[in-house]
Image (cartoon, rainbow, N blue to C red; front, side, top):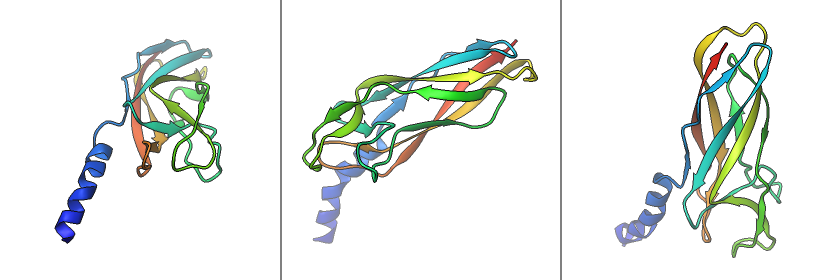
Length: 150
């Protein structure tokens, strides 16, 4: 019986292992020393799934958050799309979520002392995906942003 019960959870485990959320490789940005630049990060969610917005409607919910590791470009802020308020069976109140495909835009400052030439900046997109019935453990997707400083 225990083995049969384990098989009931397999679809849930396989769903989490597949690409519920994916990030398209961002286009290379070219920036001048002492100037600003922007990068657009395209995010795709599989149909039937959602992630909490960057401003979740409940304190205990895990927000979508994009952070960047230190590098030649300095992140000056990320703009998130306008979230949707959606009602799900598992919540008494509507939740602030993102669904489908959406973009995140990060503004960068390039220090006057930044080394010239190409590089790759690494970002981390933390999220918790859910469907109508369950939420999956939080995950972090790596984002690699190619750049060139002139």
